[in-house]
Image 1: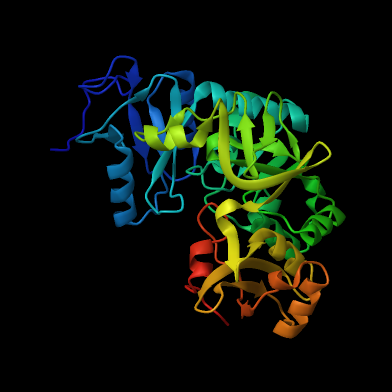
Image 2: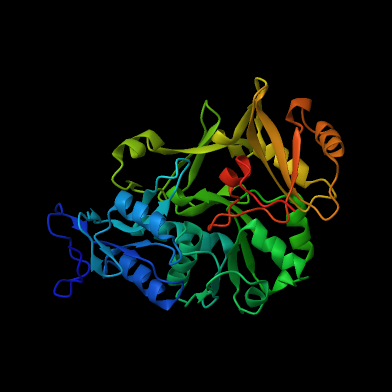
Length: 401
């Protein structure tokens, strides 16, 4: 039976836990001061570890997350079958992964602090400068804005959602955005010099977007990372302090350093599969241009069309460079003849024809990489973390104009 518990410390391990464990409390709080205080207490060890969840999470998704990650409490209420976390873990971030089954990425206080400190140092953030959090704190990008604020000794400015007007009027010195948010700021002719830094991550940033933002006065710093690395750990192609990078024989990016996660919650099998002699094996393909990392795209986003392998992100970058295209994503869709066909999903006020787009791509990439299908949408569908909803795009679950 689930019932509130008041007589014990909220940070004490639950009954039946192993020695050295601490409570894990799932929180469905809206972004705001209460969640910020809970994260601060988790990092300091004064409160339980936290599993921040979106307050708008549908009931079936919430049930699936609780069943998979088994927190000891949900918003203060004891959960039957809950399991504590290792003592060093401060935060667990829920990620759906490619299967849709929630995974819990366990992040230690030491790793979160190492990431935030390296970020503040790289950006030369000054004492008293405030950060704006307009990304969900249930995702690592939003969470790290809170941690950077803690280390910087300031109160974060927290918005429940994204509004270009609210962002521009926030008075913040630094902000973390995804490309779609930056594009929406540019759409209202924003003067972006108001921010000392715009950290841009979550998805590949098209060159035209970066050029337009910098022309509008922005100091844009592109980031690469994931929940398992406490968020962005590579800024403008260069790793943060004490972060090491290498490319394996399979083309995948490997990452090592103090920012790495402590493992997947209750999944030692997944943890072992993601580790290789101290390195975290990412799902991304990469290469080095000199000492600068270039992310080529996800290994599982390689499209096999007629026996030829096409990196979707490389094609998307070219498509987005077409002068008539405002935004673009490229995916593979099942095809009875070719196995998969290359599909360009495009936002454009005056779209090119498929033939025109194919010719444009074939001038820059092999002919087999040219899109076989063109889909027009009013906007790219996004997940809660601001990344394109590739599953919806891949299987055609999108609204077309």
